[in-house]
Amino acid sequence: MNVLNQALLEPSEAAALIASGVYLAIAGDEAVLAGLPRGNWIGGTIAYFMAQEGGQTTRGKVFVTKLDAFGLLPTITQYDAQHLPSVCQDGPDNGYSLIILPAFSRIHYEFAKNAPMYEDMYMKPLVGWISGAHLDDLATCKPKTLDGRTGELFEDRAVVLHVPLPDNISVNVNIVNLFKQGSGDVIYFEKEGFSASTCVINQRPVSFAKYLKEMGHDTRLPLVADYNGASVNVSFKAVNLQDATVDFYGPVFPKVAYRLADSFHVDYEAAFAQASADLPEASFSCNCILNYLYGELEGKHTGQVIGPMTFGEVAYQLLNQTMVQMTLERH
Amino acid sequence: MQAQQMLPIEEFGLAVGLRLPWRASKCTVNEVSKTIHLWITNQGLATAEQRRLWFVPKAARAPSKITSAEDKQWRHVDCMTYSCVVHTCDPLQPDDHELDWLGLPNSPFTKCLAKRIFQLLMEGVDMQVICEVLRIPFAELWKFKFDLDNGLLNFEYQPSVRRRAKFQSESQPPAAIQAAAPDAKAVETAILVPDVSDPVWEHLITGKLSIDIKTLSLQLLLTKLRQQVSQLQSADVKIMKLRELHRYVERHQRVLGHELAQLKPF
Image (tube, rainbow over the protein chains, first blue to last red):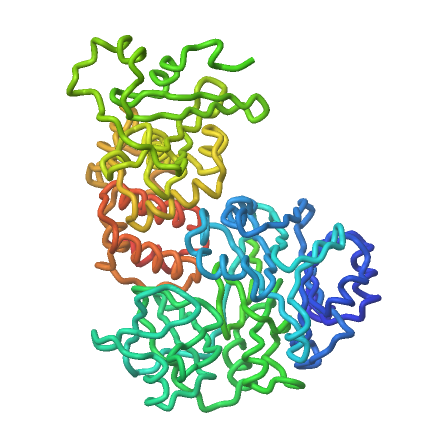
C-alpha cells in the first residue's frame, strides 16, 4: 500500500491481507465484499473512491484500510439502533473506534440525531463513514454493512472495530471542510430533523424553501454551523417549493446558528490539495460523495489524502461534505 | 413457588414503599427472569379488606375510582435478588407521578429508582457500572441521562456525607487546593489542568471565556455543553456538565497544550 495503511486493491490482494490475520476496514461493491474470505474485517458498500491514482468509480476493486493495534487486540462489534448509544463507552480507554453505518437506515438516522449525546462521545475517538451504493443502483440496491468474521450483510446494523493502542500513542481526528460560513443571515431552526419547512431569520419565522429561492442559493453549498471554530456542514438534499420543505443529508439542530456557505473560487482539487497540504499521513481517511460529484473529482486528487467517497462521514458525530482524517501520534 | 404464598400481598406493598391510600392489589413472580410484578391501586378496598384497615383515618382513604384499561409500568428498586416492576391501571393525576412508587409517563423508572440513578450519576459513577449494579438496560439509562442533560428532568442532589465533604472542599478557592497538594506531581497536574472547582470551567462552559480551540473533539464537546447548560434549570446538573468538561481535559491534556496555555493565566 503506497501510504502504508490504505489503498484501493484488487479483491485478490484484499483476500491475501485478510488471510494474514490483520484487522481491516474494507469499502466496496456488495458482491465483491460478499465474495471476500472471512476474517478480522468490517465492510461497507460504496463504489466511489479517492485512490492513489485519483478519483475512481469502480465495482471491481475494494478500498482497504489496515488498522494497526501495535500488538494489542482489536474487537469487532455489531450494533443495532437500540444498542448504538453505548458505542463510545465500549471503545478502548486508549485507542479509537471505526464505525460503518448503512445509509438511509434507522440506525443512520439514530446516529445522526443522537450521537452527540452518547455517553463518552468526544472522550474517545470515533471515526468512520456511511455506506452507500452506486448512484445508478440506488433504486434497487440498499446500502449495507458487513461483519467479516461471519460474512453477514446488514441493512440496519452498524459494524465497529474497537482498536486499542499502547499508552504512548494518541489519536488525532481532523476534518477538512472547504466550506466556511458566509456573511449572510444567521439561520436558526426550531426543530431538530432531516427536513425543515420554517426557520427563524432576524427573529422572524420564514419559509426556508422560499428563502433559498429568493436568495438564489446554489444548494451545492451547504449550511454551515460554527462549533467553536470547527465548521460543521449540513448538506442540502432537496428543496421542495411545492410543499415548502427543505430536506437535508444530516439533521439540523435547534439553538445552533447556521449560515449559508460562501462559495469558493478555486476548484475542489486545488482547494483540497491546499487544505490538506500540511496534514500528516493518515491511518484512516474518507471524504464525501457530494465533494466527489460536485467537485467532479473523477481522475483528480485531493492532495495526498485517499479513501472511500461516502454517503456521510463520521468524526465523532455525523458530518456532510467533509473530509475526515485520523492520525496517530507517538509520545 | 408463587411469591404470594410466601408473603401476604400487603407486605409487598410495604416493601416497595407504598403509603395509603395506595395498596398492592396483585403480585406475580416470574422465576425465569427473577422479576416481581406488583400491581398497585388507590381504589377503595372491598368490605372485608376495609375491616382489616379500620384504623386508617377516613380522610386518608381514597374514593373509589374506575380503573382504566391501560397498564402503566415502571421499573422499581430491586426487591432482594429480584427485579421489581410496579404496575397500575388506575387513571393518574399529575401529582401521582411524583410519588416514589410511580414514575413519569415516559420514564421507564419509578421516581424512587430515578432518584437513586441520579444520585449515582452525580457521584460520578460510570454508566456501565450503574447498569450492572442496578441491572437496568443501558439504552434506558442513556435516555434518562439524555433527558437530564437537556433539562427535561429535574432532581435535587443529596450528596452523601463523604461527597458533601468533597463538594465543600471543591468550593474552596483553587489556590487553597494547590497549596494543599502533597507532592510535586500533583502540583504540576494542578497547574496544567485547573482544578474542577476553578471558576475557569464555569466561564468556559457558559461562554464567558472564549479561547482558540484547535482540537476537534473539544470544539464539538464544548459546543454541546454550552447548549445544554444554556437550557438547564438544575444547578446540580450544571455541576455534572462542568465535571464532564474537566474529565475530558484531564484525559486529553497531552494533546491540549494550545488550549491549556490559554486557561492557565485565568
